[in-house]
Amino acid sequence: MGGFFRNKKFRIILCIIALLIGIMLYSVTQDGYTLPTTGFVGRILNPVRSVSNRISDSVEDALEMFTDAKDAQEENEALRQQVAELEKQLVDYQSTQNELEELKKIMGVKEEHSSDELSSPCTIIGYVENDPFHSFYINKGSKDGLSVYDPVVTAEGLVGIISEISETYATVETLCSPNLSVSVVASGTNESGIVEGDVTLTASYQCRMIYLDKDTTLKKGDLLVTSNSVGIFPQGYLIGSVESIELMESGLSYSAVIEPAVDFENLTSVIVVTNFAGKEQ
Image 1 (cartoon, helix red, strand yellow):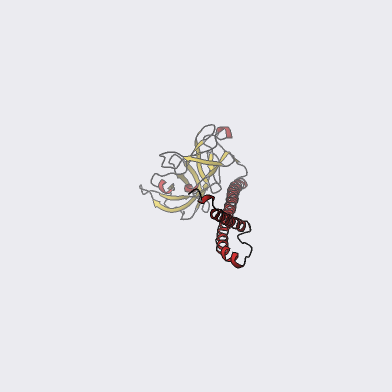
Image 2 (cartoon, helix red, strand yellow):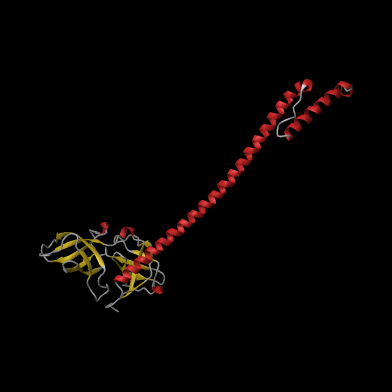
């Protein structure tokens, strides 16, 4: 057996194998194409060349797919970064828009009530637990110049008063609370009365105007504003509108269901009136 590996035939076979391998390697390095051959050698090498060409094409296709996948991954990562940056810019833009809207509201209140001193916008940071009258907390307190009984408003109208306060936050009691009584006047008829919270109406964020005479001229849609220039509420802030007129249980007077001007369900920020003409000290 050892003589076979040393004989002439074996050496010839090795030379042929080496030649074929060399041709295959050359064809791969030439982008999969060997030089044209003719005659007997061509007929022998054509199958080899065909196989080597297919191998080279497969290798080239695999390399192209790998390169394309890598490029696509890099492009996707760049696009994700661009999207993240645009989303951040959008959030910043929306935040700026909200701040501008709040400033516009303050300017509107200041223009309408130029003699009143107003705080900067106060953000609602939570609601009083188990309070059916919708009291809430704001993110400013005594260190910001706020005090107990300061009226709380928005550009839409009166919200309530500060009922408790600390250095950094305060509790706001709303018009829905029976603890609040506000002197009001109808803007069209100058008919006056008292608006206060009502347990039967608080679920719908409404309140009630009480002690109306039997000959009241109030009607649905009439607007009510604060009337006192002396007390805990400044004059001229919108309370809401008349929703309906009802005869009270005593049968001696009427009351009116009031729809507040402020949308308590969607309230996010308020302004505090820190001082006004006629404020009780």
